[in-house]
Image (cartoon, rainbow, N blue to C red; front, side):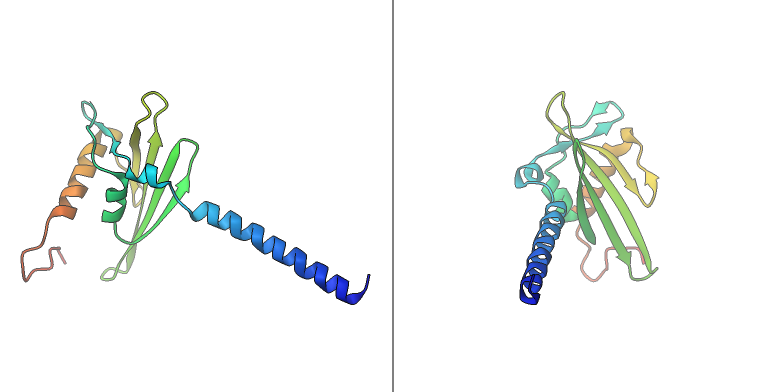
Length: 147
């Protein structure tokens, strides 16, 4: 094999490897479908399950910081990281959205905030409180937070 043929083969194989790596990386980072994101979700409460709590897309857009999705066998995990510039700490959360095989509804089945599991029966209250905080506008001239 001539030197030029070896170089051409090396370049061809290298491009193929880069293409495969790119496809794998894209498929892992692409996230849920638009249909999944626009779906309404429910969760658990002290009395069973809640009604629809809104779309996954709205919940996603209300969360600040860096966000990523991880595919599971039964749905998706939304992972978040929010950096606090005052304390220099990073808050990490994970929200597990699962598609039920029994009723084909999407459940927020687990939430973990900074290593603390939110009790399953308290997820409805957790989401409602979170949504209420997102819908509250600060009074003019205040920061809206407790610094």
